[in-house]
Image (tube, rainbow, N blue to C red; front, top):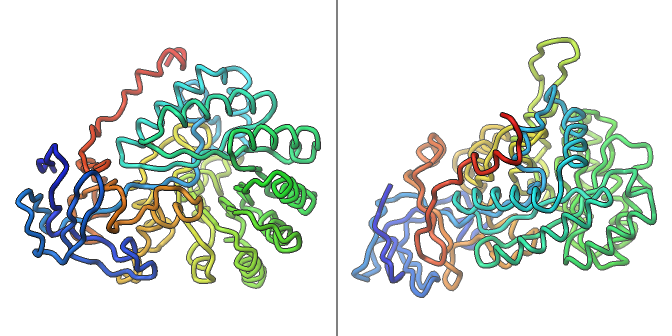
Length: 437
């Protein structure tokens, strides 16, 4: 796909197909055939297909146009360490131990910075405009990673809007001095307070402490909750209870929530109702959750029995704001991925079954654009409407199956109305960090 995008940036994308959900009709699965006029880097007009008369025209003939992607949950500090630290058995605990070893051995500023920049160049080439990353906070890593993140946020300003959440485990959260030190550094960096817990006897205390600390410092929350196949995992419910009981008014996001899918129907309904009342948004990580969850190699080769993802359709039906995101990239938690928002959408449709009814499927395109943008309150809104910057992705496909049947490697990415170079960085750039391959 290689239309000639005018260099002066004043032209019409003629006869484009755009999901109505991204044009101010959030609940709609309909498609609109429109002419999109671009001028001075922004969308100047949206008219019915065939009505725009500007001489500079790109004839799309019904091809789909989406806004640039918003990736709500990533791990830029972990990315691309797989060549030097693979997961020994593919399990979640194997990943946790491998990352701990690699972090302690290698995560100096230069190492984190180079891998983070590599990841951002991949995301940018694929068409992403905004990313939230989680950063491992085990002291003293919190000082190193926040310094690197702040430098990267400044370096990438105007290309990818960046947010970060400080990620802590239960032991750190229960350590008052460590939690306060991380909250202080997070506040200084303009960050978000994070944490991770699943099956833990002190989940009510952990969640209350996180909510109270976030309230004291005026921080939002973005937590890893119940990344586990155990139906006894109750971090999500404890989080909802803490938010409701405390009256916390900041933004709260819960990632993973895998155990919700293996709990009995009454428990799941109770938890979902609480999450909706608490105003918590949920982000599902379909690729990573499917990769890690229900993997048990202790007794030899075994096929997983479930997909690992949460009850995203039920959460959305209950009025909970939802999104899907990349999660990890080529590290022990997920051996694959490239921070490609379209890959997340494409695989999410298969894994989470939001492709039916087909009449509603296109409403889910907002799950990698407008919805996470609203949840995170990014300046980039992930919408296609008059007045917004023309950060768009042009695909060669006119329908759901045409769009989803191919990886769309020939997509065109527009930033401020101009086509960017979509060549991806070479993995060899990181060879000196990885050691012998």
